Image 1 (cartoon, rainbow, N blue to C red):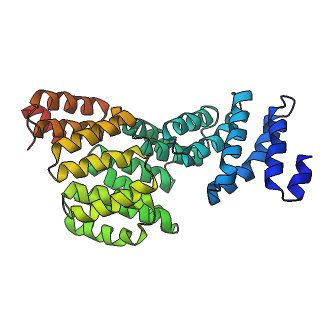
Image 2 (cartoon, rainbow, N blue to C red):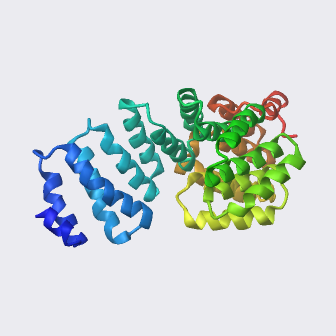
Image 3 (spheres, rainbow, N blue to C red):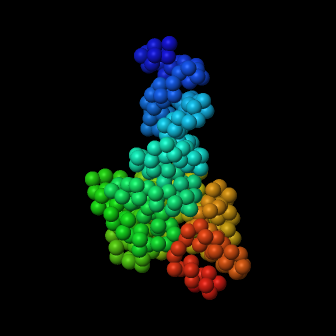
Length: 325
């Protein structure tokens, strides 16, 4: 019956008919996944809200009835991402990789989910594995570069991003992301000429939220053109309000503007939403406490940032002299 509705292009009745199929334990998970994949792709490409709920329920049924069928977790993770459930998506992609680490796509999706969930510590760990398994992939070099940028290891990140740039010349979207990450990297290395050049190259692609995110980080590192950073960040935050990385950036923007009490509240919001172990956010939280004249709390959070993976010389100096320069 379901096939008849499919041939008649009656999507709603087809989806309703599939419920009985997906509830039948006699039907193989492979057959269910084959039926689900084109539906999930249509939802992800069109963001069709009429289908989204039902397709998500079908994806959930596959993993509920077949928890050891790791392939079913890939479309499930993608639909979780669409719904802004980034922390849950991390678990889904990890399930895929627990059975098969040989394909780059789940690694790329896992890195993206870690970033959006504010899981900087997890991003560091996963991108290390990603780049070791796929050293010839531009995506692995790019996400590893982002992770290293986030902990202030700009020298190593520069090498990763250079490789990613060379590898991604035929992929305009990815190359723009790499250039935007290089802008952040060069500002971190105090190489303004190269940073400005990379920024100018990437700014044409700010319809991509990831490009905008990297460019915002670049502007915030230099504490310059905060108006431009705020405008860009407000736009992408509205489009993806559940993105914890954006929430942390809002806290950094408030800090750069000298609004320390508001920055503290925003930072706590980001940490409660998932950035509790994010090294970059923890360091910022320490900086905020220092500006609010709570040196003991500042030192505590700086040490937590170091334990979570923050490795910059700037942070080491803060801990050593108990002071924000």
